[in-house]
Image (cartoon, rainbow, N blue to C red; front, side, top):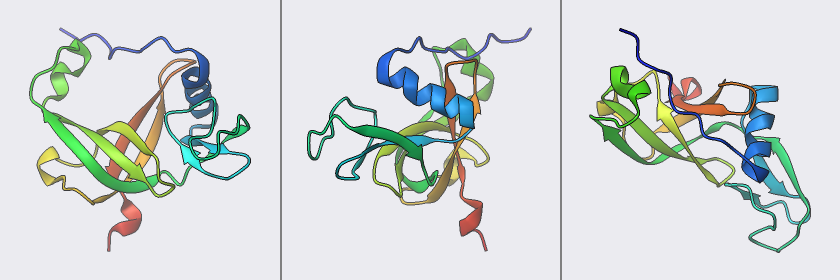
Length: 141
């Protein structure tokens, strides 16, 4: 018996813009203030630092450090049932903002705060990009 797919949210506004850019390019983009250069996530209509309404989505380094994580041994979403236990990871990107993704390519028991990771974008439909968190191969060796 195959499990159903993972839940995909319905998006609108700036969140839809954020995900569409990731779907189109296959890369994580962050909102940056066109006036002061401050990055933010989630996207906002006004800069948190200077209140400017001028913003742009720019490619991210896609690299950062584990800020926080949780390991789930049960799930309410049937799409994740075959993958338990799985880890949900908060990554503090090198640009400063934090994003959330699911761990891939590493056993959850090997996670530790501060570990260098990379965020990978996976297209899921026309308007949603799933974020995976993987070990940063640039840090190995």
